[in-house]
Image (cartoon, rainbow, N blue to C red; front, side, top):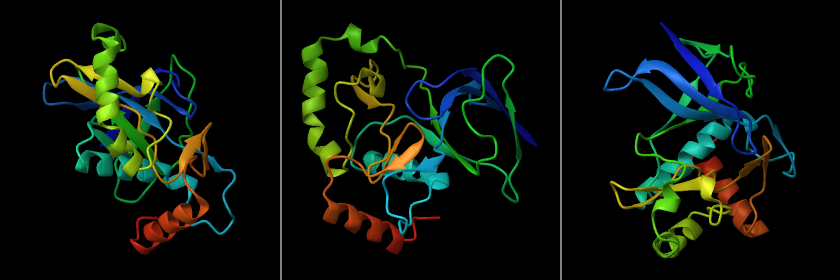
Length: 207
């Protein structure tokens, strides 16, 4: 079976990727809209690092799952596996948009776009309400080393059904991807970063 991915728009952030629609239908029989991205290199990390840029989608999924486990709202997400044994064929359809991601990568991170998402949602609620929620969840974000989110409206939106913020772009907490390259996250000391590296390697999270 072939999974077709229709590229409907180009990249929105600094990393390679784009807005897509999947041929696989959702529960209502509609094509699923999502955003797909990956990384293609490493900068500023020691050669001995166990981190692999090809696994960046896995790292980002780990961050989303940790955020979800402590109550931070994130959209549904998935890892697309490609060019691996026992996986369905994946076909990119890029008739109208330039391919912003390599079709030779093994993994891609997919963040599904909720039907309740609106790019103008933050304008529909008082800024004091948005700030109240940002302040309330600041400790959660700091515990997970999630940085570079606040004051960047493209990273979150207001869900009127849930009446709370949903973070649609968390990035990764233990390594950042900027302009397609993995790098050490800001705001984390050298000793803290070494601890995180060892923990991920020990827990067999690095594939």
